Image (cartoon, rainbow, N blue to C red; front, side, top):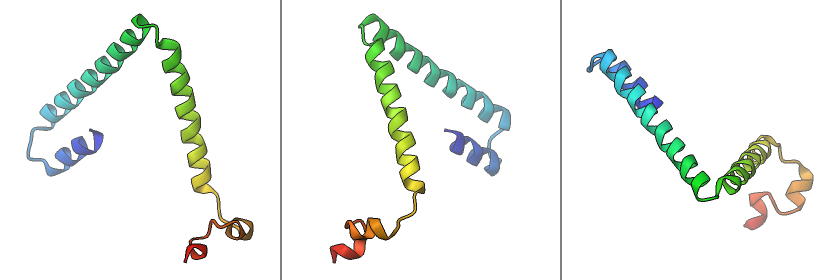
Length: 87
């Protein structure tokens, strides 16, 4: 949504005030949707499960980020991680 807004502002074909108003309206709709989902989870007794899922997902994302920043070394190549081993 943000990228599209920036693209429209760069093109300058539409009044920037209209773009900003539509962007803020869209963000408000997204926030309302999330709030409605959380309210439904609360009514359905799923709030604890949702919080647990959010924590697990955040931890998984953090681990994936750490792994993506790791550099391969000779030990990982010997373990079969190096794509050359698959030829």
